[in-house]
Image 1 (cartoon, rainbow, N blue to C red):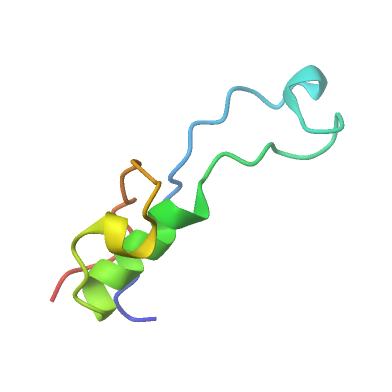
Image 2 (image 1 turned 135 degrees about the horizontal axis):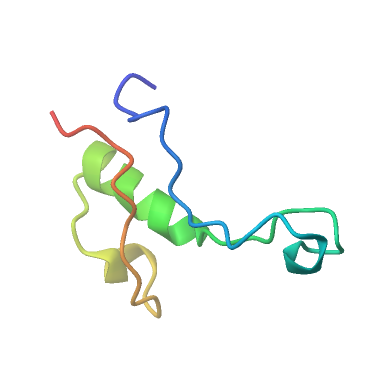
Length: 68
């Protein structure tokens, strides 16, 4: 959508060496979907407490959204 801050990479990749890849071919999963969903819920649903959506999660949202 229009509020997504695109064109950015929100991950630190160790390396592209074969031994660092999942099954020696894929980038390993590194982003918890809850960090993305919490940013969207904050902007679109005005939910500012992550424990409402994800009671057992203590992570932080990724700043992917522009706040209007």
